[in-house]
Image 1 (cartoon, rainbow, N blue to C red):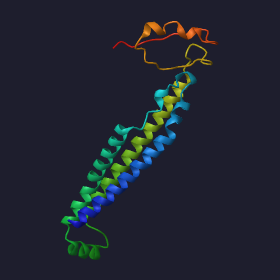
Image 2: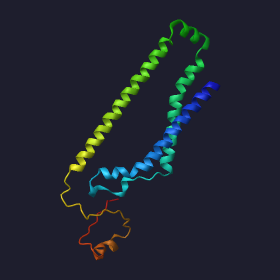
Image 3: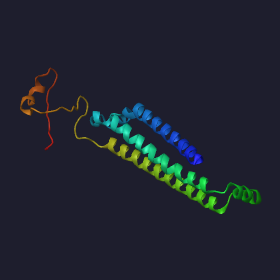
Image 4: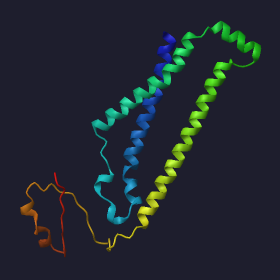
Length: 176
């Protein structure tokens, strides 16, 4: 039982440390995504906030990963007869066939996931290059995008053109 607790604690610490590092990187690099898009498509929504909901999801994911990744080795280690494993390893110079199959399965799945991640990252970058090359059909210099709460839209119509330096304005709403 103590071995299971130690393995799960170790896995949990690694998962939480990875999650914290991921959150720190997300906070530091969150604004960098805006600079990959064309100037006209840089809304404030590309810098999502790291609020309580994001933190709760990240911690729940870390705990889930820790339990999934730590439970299999912990159960395997608790069931194993240490004497037999040491004798078998001394005779053959390596661990048993079951360990080799499990290790091979884990390495194969890790390589497959890494390839999937690399292909996804490549497609992501290619689609950003394609998005940057699209002609928006107007000159994006001097164009500003903003998000407002138009709870009283009748009062806001026409008012932005009164501001000095504004030559034209428009707004659109989404049906609710």
